[in-house]
Length: 374
Image 1 (cartoon, helix red, strand yellow):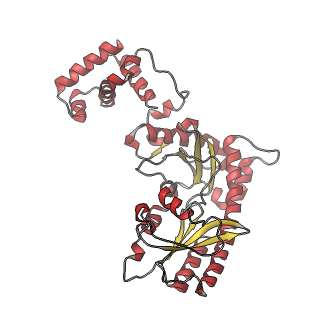
Image 2 (spheres, rainbow, N blue to C red; image 1 turned 135 degrees about the horizontal axis):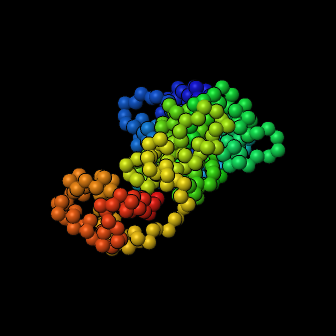
Image 3 (cartoon, rainbow, N blue to C red; image 1 turned 120 degrees about the vertical axis):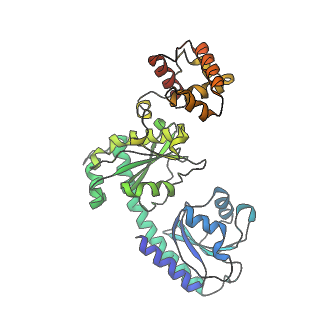
């Protein structure tokens, strides 16, 4: 199906002799056409971001949608807006089918193409073909997404087991290994992106175990999972965090994988050392924390250390315990003198009543600090 989209966008580029991209209605990239240019039109920053980042910013989306593209049935000309990174004007060809907009074909154009150019009629015919394909893709994606939702949520109507139905719908792709990717937080409970490359099924589910109201669940094969996470907005910025479950070899095993994916996503949000995407197998002691109830009250002994005025001492304690109580390594990590560290450790013991020479006291403090950030 992706090859078909690429062929359609290549047709548009050849027909209009202009750089073009095809995006879903969620502004995620589906296909783009290579285009030779003597100027820098093809390097428009929004187009570059769409190609490299597989999507557009909220500011760009708001600027474009402000011109009525979601309800348009004909080409829409959009002027530049440097403040949103739109340095070059565009023509938007709505991609519709059955009265529904499924996406947009974007042409970099600063007025060279007239709206009465007969070639635009041919281009709109290509857009309608793309709309039919996207509609078909959406129907198939909705069905497997609903089946994945039924399987992971444990809610199924009478009839075949959801695992069997999902395996049948996926066909050969159901033959493992398979992983689940959790993306959290996912703002819109019922808004799914156009199925990106690498995703076998998408759905939204409650995400409390990831510290969010909602999470996106994506089913994928292990080699495609990391690239898929990037396409769904998981990156090193301030966007959502992602978690990958351990691999499973059968669709029926996926319900046990979903808590792992959510737990890994929560670990990625709790500790910078995992980056934006964490794997269940790599989060170590955080696997145990996933079994704890959300918003667990702090242990009374550690509560004084968690007050705002002792934030530096709490950070010192966690760093000290992360480095197995080794003073030299801890002092280097904190950028302080060892004597300063010894003084802080003494203050920590006074505040908590714990003896950090005792293993159980260290364990209690370490778990309490990790839970507080959890």
